[in-house]
Length: 250
Image (cartoon, rainbow, N blue to C red; front, side, top):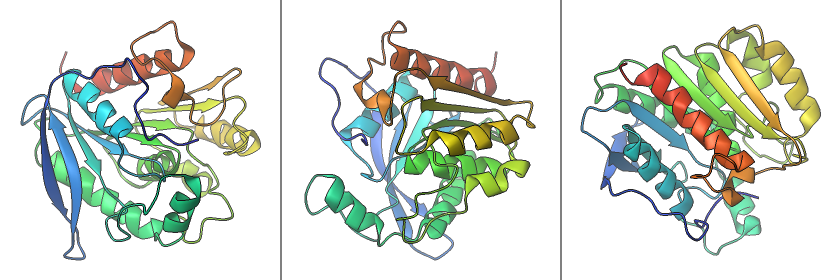
């Protein structure tokens, strides 16, 4: 299940929020939410799931700003428009109109936008589900990224109409610090493909991953991000530490 609403009781820190437009090579402008600890803080791109921008990811952007970053949450569905109604059925129908190779190009432009606004050269990415797939693709196609991927698809599902490149086909080019998470019971992604991917990704000495026992797809959405004793919450703590260790000056 993808992430939309914020679980109750999880407060976000105050942060400066603004709506921005990201220039694309096509001449279009991609709308995005920008939440910053400081104007020149290290940048972190958030790549959302097939539900797109939602209160959940806006919350994560505020948490990242509270940790010392500037977070950018782009709307890769800006060409398709908002969901006409909530739910997976409408989200799948909208995703069928998405050219995910083009979306990957859009995210490259978003990384470039963050890089010009930060005093640090590397840019962080945090992706979830569809966005996790994008994150793994980005980590195999450009340098100077610090990557976190939650339940990305090494092989995008067969029902996706216009998929991005398969991360498993690009894994030989995986570079930079990469931290990836999956749930042991993730039948949506398929753990056989995850096993194949992680075996090949181990050739990158900076690749780390964890498969969480007893958890399925989208486990972070029901986790307490502020509780390191919560298995899912502990992955978020680890993700922020991963980003801080590579992006924030010591």
